[in-house]
Image (cartoon, rainbow over all chains, first blue to last red; front, top):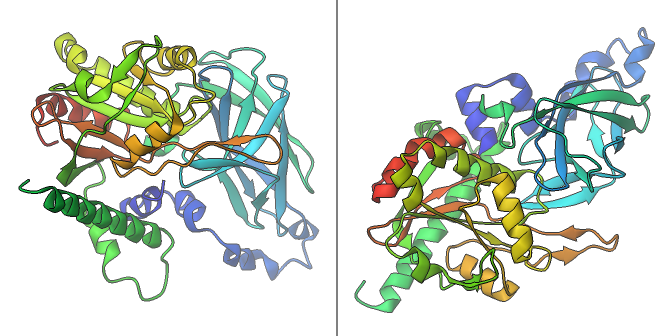
Length: 164
Length: 226
């Protein structure tokens, strides 16, 4: 996990990865200049991409995705709901330990990257066992922005877009 | 290997070096601007990106682990894997991300081997959450995440922790939070043991892909350096 960032940087992978590793509030300055002219710059503008769920083993599953915020205000991912489970939490992973968190920050003009080996959505007590190739509908809830519905394609157990 | 002191001192040095290397990597992850541009970056970029394996100068001795396997029978790690190419990993089944991925990667890579080599390779998964991971749970989980041939071990946490420590892997006991959730942890590495020396001589981090394992397994089966 710790190795991924420098390796990615060294290999010159996408800027998105570099940002995920080291992003900070500094990039928010780019849009602050015209914030008075553009009202949307004062609100979070969220988009969700790259979502997937590795095929679950047993009755628990993880979900990964990227929330991009092109707005001038920060937001937070506060919860996730889905028909597939009544027990969905969001987890951070640090030093091989995962912990439930109340929310994840989505910086203004930044992104929240839920990726392998790090932060993720955790589904417990799955009501059905999704198969590879199926899709799992989820709804993301935010502190400010309206909820967003996303379909997570179910991939192989070891799927990792960062390794392709 | 003259005296015990020498061996154990060497080991400490080796793992200390690994730790320093790991720290250096951590630091460079977000090192950015300032004055650290000199050393660690160069080390990292000097290593080819595809090299998932870390070969140890001083291999680990096999840990003294006697636990219960997925059938509930006693399993002596040293005895059962003596002279056989072996991979060991510490994790837990309530782990949605890294643990099933690691086991799946190894299972996929193993299938790329000739049948005779598949049979030689011992893959041992030791739970870090023995209270929840019973023999039956482990058996079910390993068959689904990896392969039914994989050995799953459970038992007393202190025994598991001591075994992991002999391999330089620190595992904390699962801890119940105030909200009732259990925080468990998985090991940072998969360790490969040579069939020739029984030493744990190669480490794989959690970024190792199934291709990385597939590439290295034929050598590990023979006890060669990948």
